[in-house]
Image 1 (cartoon, rainbow, N blue to C red):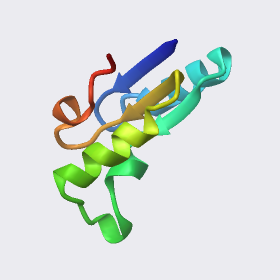
Image 2: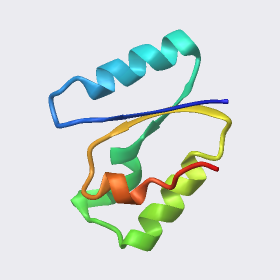
Image 3: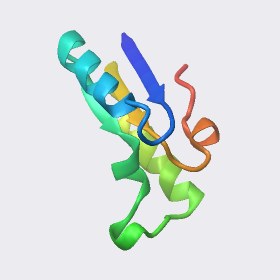
Length: 79
């Protein structure tokens, strides 16, 4: 199992780093900003966000990147 979360401010290079690591380690990319935002930059409710993230990280191996409000409290901790 290999799971890596890359969080950071806009412009910090987190997406570039996550893509490079994902390619090198052959990990599926989970891009939190595409999960978080709905069309026209509408923010879904917290329950929808948690469900989307939970579904996105079911794989044994992935690398995520993103910067979204409350990311630290939205990401479920794998057991």
